[in-house]
Image 1 (cartoon, helix red, strand yellow):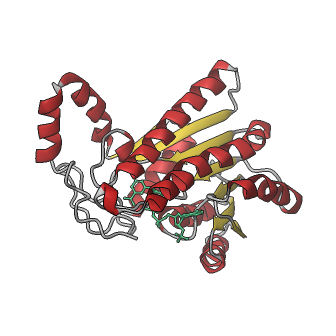
Image 2 (cartoon, protein in one colour):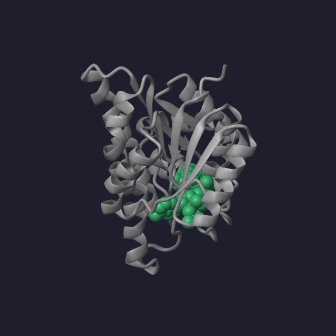
Length: 268
Ligand SMILES: NC(=O)c1ccc[n+]([C@@H]2O[C@H](COP(=O)([O-])OP(=O)(O)OC[C@H]3O[C@@H](n4cnc5c(N)ncnc54)[C@H](OP(=O)(O)O)[C@@H]3O)[C@@H](O)[C@H]2O)c1
């Protein structure tokens, strides 16, 4: 029997990209997936794909940037469907460009969705996860949680915050003896979902496929891993950055293409 069989899993931003693929793959493994998106049609389409794959799919509208709507959304979900076992905080946006040319509203929106929405969702559903036999909080961060991202500074800030939040909460739950709730932080490099169209991949970091990333996430969650990092060499960045003098690290970041990767961003 699959680890995911019969588990009730809520995914935010599941109308496209890795959220949609994860929903479908979980359906294939017999899960009950609450597909949430801010638009009705993508949510319903993906919920149908979950059903077609053999799982149970529910479509629900949820805009995670509307923080005040999250607790009422949870209460309604409890009435209509029940408590969840796994929360996947996947919704995210990016606005690339030269810092002052990008509207302040877009910088702030990035933090509102990627960070504050994720924290509000985790807060609203923590009791569900605590009541579950094997509760799990899965937070989609990014490889840019490990490194500065020129031309995407607010996106990097939002993901550094997610990594810090996730890691802290994971340790807190352990400290409090809450052993049935795992926390997994996912840090992938660029994925071919359209979000980062136009970027130039740094050396040793080819464009990832959504299939590869979703496979790693589902394996990592099943094994209750603290971190899922793709490609794994991203984890070495911390070591390298710590070991090298600042100006040498800056040169490495430039020559490897890390510093310039977002310069030609055209994504959605
Ligand atoms: N693609 C990459 O290279 C990459 C790399 C590392 C991490 N990630 C992270 O992976 C996650 C999924 O991204 P993806 O690559 O699959 O791109 P994607 O297809 O654009 O998925 C992002 C999803 O988030 C949804 N969303 C945006 N704002 C929302 C809001 N306020 N409330 C609810 N949903 C909202 C989007 O819905 P709409 O269609 O309505 O906008 C979209 O379905 C994101 O957190 C992203 O930061 C992506």
